[in-house]
Image (cartoon, rainbow, N blue to C red; front, side, top):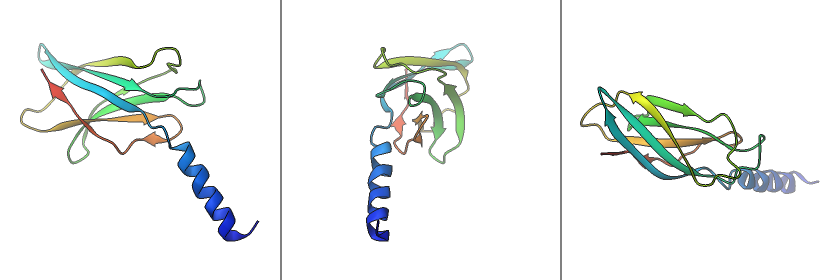
Length: 117
């Protein structure tokens, strides 16, 4: 195989592997006592233990991570699905975002604003 053809094939395969990042459908925070309970709804084409959405995190605009929810198993039969993280300290007056992660592709580039209720 020629070098340009091999490079083109490798680029196409890398793009295909990252074609379906976790989609954040909703990200809301509800006050609970002194902290917050953050609930995030994700959709991802989980295919089993080898490829599934394995977490999400709360970030400030500068990338500071305030909390991470690890997802320890695939949700092939439960799409979309919602999971929460309780007892999170969220600073007032600071825009906050949620980023999702996939076991294969890592942390996504998309950020969704966190809605406080």
